[in-house]
Every structure is written in structure tokens, then in C-alpha cells.
Figure 1 (cartoon, rainbow, N blue to C red):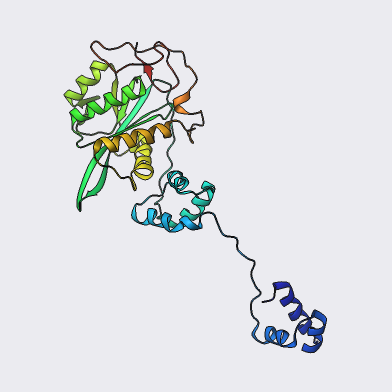
Figure 2 (cartoon, helix red, strand yellow; figure 1 turned 45 degrees about the vertical axis):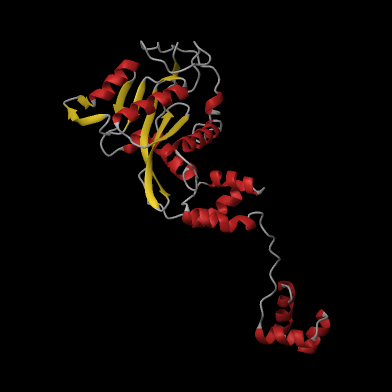
Length: 315
């Protein structure tokens, strides 16, 4: 096939009234070739398209999106790297973008920031899986520090008050200290009733626990989950970035994988704050929270120094 420039010359000379024989002689083409292009007007040959490094992996990506509902391209990139992909994440994003489902519009929300040691947000998420053809579920507890966005994730079989308290303790131990305020949803194992005047009616077991460790509980206003948007987003990150396609033998195995994934996440530069890696912040000198009597959160490093991690270490 002729390139577009040659086709244009044939059409231009024909428009000038020149016969096929003259056009063929002038362009060095066979008369039948000139006659064919003038009669049928075939398309010029397109440029050769170079293959993409992503081509061998596109079917696998489509399966991840279609079957596992995996849309997080950064997580996809990690798995593709293990399979031998050496291209950029932008190539993966460009391929996945038209595969994503449409997202309904939401009202914009003004984000607010907190000081180091000020706030921790936590919430539950429900995670469904199949075991031997039976549909089962576990509950994922996610906590995030307001200042640094450092995350903690653990999976449990139930989400009652006793389990919630154990999860909060595990999160504080992972973070290395206690925040001043803990913000969460108006869940029954935290908050029992609507405000009675200005005083909330707390779950007494949870309220006693929070009082014993010296952390002030807070709940969102009704129908405004954006108030704790950091943990809302973090639960979504777990559901989109970790859970799709995960394989585990038991709950301990699942939590080991979650801990490793969370540790890798905490070592990255946060895309919102751009302050630096949450797990490697520069020292922040401030008042340390005294340890409540009888409370042990485990061995803590750098005792007496408060770091920019959104928590105050115990002494």
C-alpha cells in the first residue's frame, strides 16, 4: 500500500486533469496502481504501531478488574513487577482508566489537619471471601493517625466491644503511643444514644477503657462520615489495594500479609500531605503522655522523644 503522501499526489495530479499514463510516469508507479487508487480510493497505509511492554499482561489486568474488582494501579504495579513487567505505572493507569466503573459525583469537603499527637481515627470494614464454595466474611479494623497518615490494619472474626478494645490497643502498640483524641463512627459498641442535651451516652465498657488510657473519645455527626475522612479513605485503600485477589490459609496468615502490606504503605511519601514517609519522620519535641497505671503497650523505642507520627509516646 502507498503512504498518504503518494496517495495525495495521485489525487492532486488527477484533479489537474492529467491522464493516468502521465501520472504513472511522473510518480514512477505502475498505471494499474494509479488506476486502482483513483477508482477505489483505498486508504493509505498507517504507520507501524510499536508494541507496549504491557501487552503480555493486559489479559491478566482485565481479569483483576473484572473478577477481583481491583482498581488500584499502584498495587497492580507491584504484582506486575513480580511477573516481569518493567514499564511505568502511567502505562498501567492509562490501560485501566476505561475499565473503571463510573463514579457518582460527590459534594466537595474541606479537609482539616491536626497536630502531632492530636488525633487517631478508626473504623470497621466488612470483607467477604469464599471458602470451599461457602461465602464467609471477616471484619477489618483500620486505624490512621491524623497528622502522619500512618496506618494500622488487623482482621478479626467479630466486631463486638471487647474485640474493638483489643484492636485499639493493638493499634496504639503498633504506633508506639496514645493519641489525645480517638474519632470514629456512631457505632453501638462506642456510642449508644443520641445526644442528651450536650452530653453523649457512651457504651460504658468502651468509655471506661478510654478513660483508663487517658484518650478522649469523639464520634462523627450523623450522616457525615467525611468528618473522619482519613480513615474512610484508608478503609477504601484496604478494600481496593490489599483485599482483591489476596490468598490466605487462616486469620493469622491474613494478618501477617496485612502487616507487611501496611508497613510498605507506611514507608511511602503520602500523596496528600507530601511531608515525607510516615515511618521516617524527623524528631518532634513535645510533651509525652504519661503511662496510665497498669497499662503496658509493649517495648517502645526512643523513650522520652515524641516524633512527628501523630502520637505521643509513653514513658
